[in-house]
Length: 149
Image 1 (cartoon, helix red, strand yellow):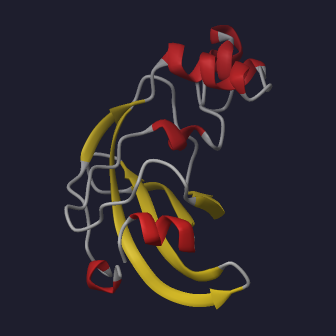
Image 2: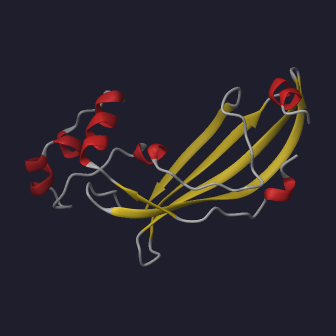
C-alpha cells in the first residue's frame, strides 16, 4: 500500500517556537512548569530562555510527501518516541521535515492492518539536529476499505 514511499522525505519547513503557543500547549497538557511559561525563570535557567515541553513538536508543520495520502480520521496512534540533542528554545526558528522509514502489513482479529513508520526531524539552520520523533501509525481494515485498498 505505502511500500513505494519508504525513504521519501518532505521538503523542510520553517517553524517558530512561539511563546504564546508554548504557553497554550503547556496549559493544555496540564504542565504549566515555570521553565515553559515564566520569562524570568527562563532567563535564570541554564538555557537563558524558556524551553518548550518535550512533546511540543507535535504542533509543527513537517511538510508533505506527495505519495503519502492518509485520511484525516480513523487512524490509530501506535507509538511515538522523541529524542533530543538539546531543548527547543522559545523564540527560535527551526526546520522540520518527515521521512518514511518503513511500511508493512499484518493480519489481525480485525482484519488486515498497515503499519506506517515515519521519522520527523527538527534541525537548526546549519543542519544540526535538535530533535527527532519516531512514530508508528496503524491503518485499520476499516480505513483501508474506505481508501479502497
